[in-house]
Image (cartoon, rainbow, N blue to C red; front, side, top):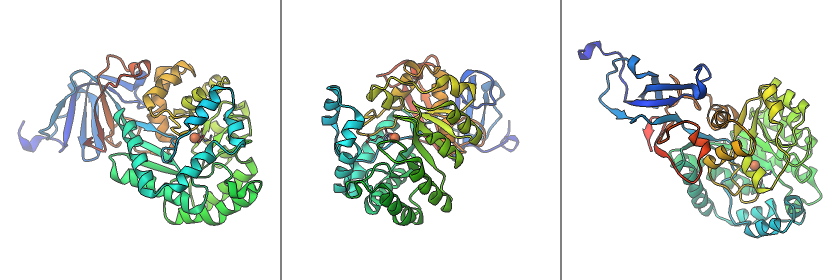
Length: 410
Ligand code: NIG
Ligand code: FE
């Protein structure tokens, strides 16, 4: 065919691949298209389909996928990867039977990480966060959510969010930030939770919002965190800045946090081991994603499972995150979460993979990511596997061969 007759200019085409599109409009499991090809123009997917139907693109660069599998870039929709210090001592305490809540009540837990994070410089925090982000990227993560919440005063919360932004600006990784000032009551506000909430609403959140440092506002609704009423005040403030909300809800007890965040059309409710049916229904109504965190379930030796059957029955979208943090989930691997979502939460491997692609994108409001379809961002991973289920089935091997983010090979 002559040059003039060629259809569209694209930058490269990946041929000879089995594409796990995760596109809900594709009927097969994993949205799989076998013997497929994907064309990329700039940062976007220009075409995907069976290779036999590949249009005659004007393209000189073809990559042979060698019959391997291509998935969307993985999305870790819940992390706390900016922090300093270590909680190894608490790990040992918990092994002797001291509970996560007891440690928090004794002034350890989140507050221990707050002390170390406040003392660390922005550069020190950046170095630590960069290493962790690169670890996630090595297993195919192309987008990550990063929370503040270990600063607990205006200055240190701003510092954490600046570090998170810098991670996104310096690595080939999309970063969505969440302001989690309402993570714990800092020592200087002990016994004065309402005063701390006022500080967050009157000073910290306004500053964070004006600096454009947060993409969403989060909170910890729990006995050892904040009441639903206190969280509602933060959410009202978030709304006044047009910031979407999400919530650590029903992790250790049922506080009706899911209903609360659903009332605010929240992006997600996260953890959810103690979620009730009314919470499930409220989430369905508002389109709030259920973000399940098998790493925290496992690390805290939790035995109460999230209500998987109710979530399925009411067709709530389920995402999976690493919750990577030094206390409840010191597990820096989204691949491990795929495995644990299946083995612990009895999610099908397909549900688990949806949880780190299409549904994780929804949990972050990333409308251009999470599936392989025309017009979406060209974020994808080439895996040396024989079946898509291997992404959840194995752990301790890294089958990632190549990874592209917004059309660029990393
Ligand atoms: O998602 N639940 C509250 N926050 C974190 C834990 C933070 C910590 O222990 O440092 C979580 O599990
Ligand atoms: Fe968390």
